Length: 125
Image (cartoon, rainbow, N blue to C red; front, side):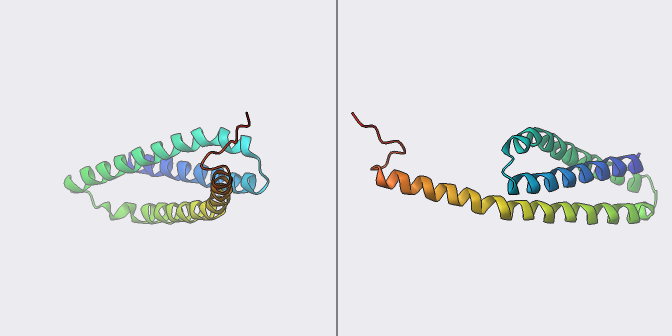
């Protein structure tokens, strides 16, 4: 049971890493449609990742309380932790690309509203 949960977490982590890598490429090439299409898939994968992490902890606790030496899972769990850290850093790389673009657009909107007296669109009557 624990090995299958770890395997599922591995698959989810790999899928998210692949999706985020594609996001980085799409941001750089301004391919917004693909970004939006992948967004719901990534949210689902993140939810599944969270649920499976919780399930893994529960199963490890059950095994521990029933007297099983959970050290037998140490290598697999350490490998999974390494992959999750890689996912975290890759996500940070995506954020470092996206956040400046977001700020640039916010600055443009702020400048336009300032010029138009607090309104984004100037209406001429």
